[in-house]
Structures are given as structure tokens and as C-alpha cells.
Image (cartoon, rainbow, N blue to C red):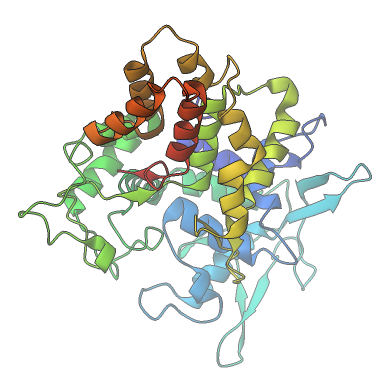
Length: 404
């Protein structure tokens, strides 16, 4: 919604990090941005600290929670100084079942508002104190009094105006469209992790900042680039460009990637003719979560990572073959893509072509056309049923879930 309304990404980042409010859409205190922290915060704030640094700054601080990072210059104290920005954060379960996110005064173990410290243990067993600092830069104020120093709001401002925000989002967007970012992994920027195309990376980051973080422009620049328009087909001149094998990507060709489950779900929604209904937001959201639940695997790590993928297990196969959403997509209702094509005045060859274009973004091959059209021309065969079966087969093909 924020993207559609043209809200800048730096503003989105600020709102997510500094949010307070309720997670119940029917509440007067509802704030959707609060869900970012609510879904990550637990008994402590270490997970939200590591995730915020990765998502918005491209900095892997998680390793430094227990010891200084062995590969980068991130020291252990930097993690806990970042974590100190979240010390005022509190959550509460309300009587109506909703969850509230707020900030409160923080006094630390010394019970001092003016000098509200946090502590962490070094590998040597020594206990050290930590005050809010942004990647080593001290905040120059240690107060835990909310009226004097709203720590999360201060952090949100620091993130918003950091050049790392532009680099992080550019790297993520490039990775989204190409399957590979300028660094591997994309959330670990720094001198220890070389950038594959530093000049292009810096240019896109500067232009994104100059556009006031209008990501619609950033994405437009990417998809209009020569690299994005290249074929995914190997040729004698680019057969060595194989980042899938671990080498640095050269972007001499388009890398085939598997669609994310969310992308497949939205594609099926469009083909089923299902429109977003503001009056049924909760119902549609629950339906989407239930469908996506078949494809999300919790990695069971202290970083709270998840893996979204198609691995062909039984639940996923059943969802794609005969789940409720697939049944809607293959229905002959007037609202579905299939129904509109079947009920059109087009001749059978044109109908087949439109089915292939809608599912695979290509026309059928000569062999595919011959097989299907010979079949539907047989008077003893139900042509509509054939087209319906072909449509189902296309949507369950590997080609449908591949971006190539």
C-alpha cells in the first residue's frame, strides 16, 4: 500500500523502526508498521537488532552478538550498542487478543534514567556496558527517559539518513530481479565482501538517494537496463558466467530463478480473477497465509530465518494440483482468465495461443499446437475439457514457476 501510494522507502524504513500501536486492524490504535517489530521481538530484542541491521543497512551484526566478527570489522560492542536503541521497547497482550507495541522509560540495572545502561558478556567472561551507538558512532546521550530521548525514533532517523540504506535496498532490488545481488550474501556489505560491479552499484545507490527513495524509479532503471533484457540462453561467449556454481555474477545473461511462493500466489489470484477487497482484508490475508504456509520453512536458527521455496513435497504438490485456489483458477467462471478465453469468439488456435501467453508468456511451439489442435478438432472429444486440462497442466509445469 505504501509503495502504491508513492511513499518513499526511507520514510517506510523510519515508520517500521519507530512504530508504536496495535496489530488489530479494527482498533483505533492500529498501525500496520508495528507488525515488523511485533513479529520479531521476543524475550529480548536481539533478533530485531540483527534483522534491522541486515534489512536496512546490509550489515550482518548477528555474529557479533557473542564475539567480534572474524571476517569484518564489526566488534561485539557494536551489536549491543545497536541493541540498546530498542531498550525502551515493550509489548503487551490486550484483553481483546491483540498485541500492542509501545515505548516506556528505561532505567537499566542501575535504575538511573539519566545513565540507562545495558550490559553484555564478552567471550572472556568480562561484563561490559553498552549505550546507544550507531555502527560505532556514539549517540552522545545515555538517557532512558522517553520524553528526553526516544531511542527507537533516534535510530530510525540514523537509518533513514545513512548511505547504507540506499546501498542495501539497491542490492536487494537487483537481487530480486536477477537472482543475484552485487554481493553474496546481499545483507553483508563491507570491505570483507567485494562488490561485483562497484561503479554501477554506487551509481544506483546515489541515484536512489537523489530520487528521494522512489523505488519505482529504481526498479524502472533496473528493468530497462541492458542486463535485464538479455536472454537466459547460454551462448559460446557467456558459458563461463555461472554464479549458480559459486562464481561472481557477470550479468552477461539473464539468470533463471524460481518464483517466490508469494509471486506464484499473486499470479494465481490474477488468473482466478480475484480482486483485493478492502472490506474482506482480514479474510483474504488469512487465506494467503494459509496457502503460503505450505511453502515457508522455519530454519530454526537464532536469526529467525525462513526459507520460502518449492521443493515438491506432498503439501505443495496438492496445493498446486487440486487446492481450492487452483480449482478457482481452472474454473470456467466469467471472471477467470480461462473462462474469458474459452467463452471468447476466437478460433481454437487463438485460444490455445492466449492460454500459453497467459501462463508461460510465450506462444506454443509447433509441436504443442499440432498435438492440442488435432485433439480438439476430433468431434468425439470435449474441446472445452481439453483446454481446461491443458490450462491445468501449464500451471503445474516447471516453466510456470520459473522466471526466465
